[in-house]
Length: 141
Image 1 (tube, rainbow, N blue to C red):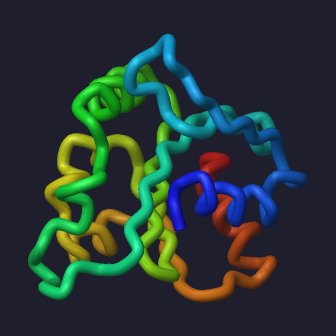
Image 2: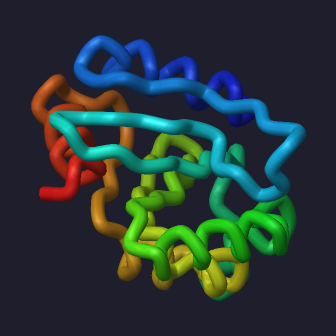
Image 3: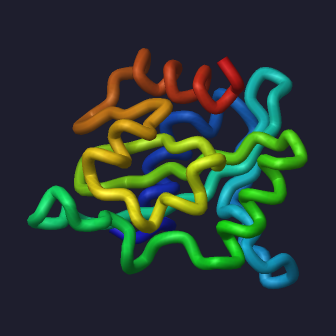
């Protein structure tokens, strides 16, 4: 599964419960993948996906294929200005929601660190209630 497929799976579950736009920006370097508004709260989501967890638990999960430096800078600047930015990491069948304030450390985080930094984490097929919890989390609750 690539990030586009990862997003299609998510959008199918939550797209009708808020306003979500996948953004492909060639103009603004580092701009996140998704712009959203849920219950009057606007934010951005950067998507990252890996097929499987590293074999060693102390290996950084997104050392390769993680955030580019321009993405880290954009996220840090937006968070510093009071904006709401999330990193939604998919690994195998897990989804891990990380607040943008962790952007500079994201690529260096191993499995335990990602889980500890998570604002929301789920694995497997999610129930409707778990999707509601996801929306509540990105909506600022």
